[in-house]
Amino acid sequence: MKQFMTFVKKEFLHIFRDPLTTAILLGLPMLMLVLFGFAITTEVKNTQVAIYDPSRDAATEAIINKLRANDYFVFKRYLNSPEEIETAFQRGEVGLVVVFSERFYENLLHTGEAQVQLITDGSDPNTATTLTTYATNIIGSYQQDLLQLSGVPYQIVPQIKLLYNPQMKGAYQFVPGVMGMVLMLICAMMTSIAIAREKEMGTMEVLLVSPMKPLVMILAKTVPYFFLSIVNLTNILLLSKFMLGLPIAGSLVWLVGISLLFIFVSLALGILISSMVNTQLVALLISGMALMVPIMLLSGMMFPVENMPWFLRAISNVIPARWYIIAVKKIMIEGLGLSSILKELAILGGMAVFFIAVSLHKFKNRLE
Image (tube, rainbow, N blue to C red; front, side):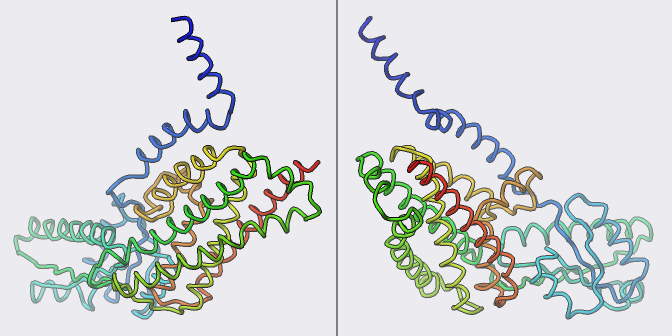
């Protein structure tokens, strides 16, 4: 029994000897609980709503007030013309646009029927369905109020229009997310494990004292994996186009360009992880498990970021996959050009510079 307890004690000491491994083993479950508890929800809240209302009468005003009083919607602004509708979606300003017909209340009184159009982004079919259902129910509640007041069964007929994905194909939602998750996880794991392997084998110290500059060494480590990632990107795009039937509405050049930048960011993140750990196991835990959950839950791949609490929205800003997925949707699905993804390009470029700079600093410290 004494020998058994000795071996148990040794194993505990072996585990707690590496603080980073201990933090992952004890902290990852709590992180997953918080993320799953707050991020996973089927509710859609705080959706920005724009209104195009050419009639501006009592009925439309009453419906708008009901929308504004609801927790699911936040009134953004009135639109001055139908041409502004798609522009508002392309800029990411709104998630829903409500379009009232002309002489809405007059038609309702004279014919007993009026029409309202609900327009939303169909690239996320689940969110689009939820938003139109919420808005339809609110309009239905106003219709019930009219029935109770006048006793006349007025009919307000909502017409639903889904932009970019009228067929509500699920591939429009999950393909950009899968692209971001696969490229980031594969790239980060490849570089982090490769360098951690050299540390374990003792060859990294030999490289560090060689005449080669640390920056050249870092870039040389990423080049082979960069070309392998290009092969993965090509396969993903071919499968998305010809097997899943997802069209590339925008420029293929800019789609490939933003993808190559994202690949470099992911490789740089792997280099950063490898510079902070000494074993392949820890590198695998961080680049695999510790990155996968935030990417899946906080990048907008599965659940809209806007529905999450403010602290999770803040954390999502530092996840590269979030900005890549936004850019891919703009180019691949919405058919927008370079001007629409300048923000995402700047953020991803800044992340790449930051990751490389910190990794270079770590390598220099080891040399000293």
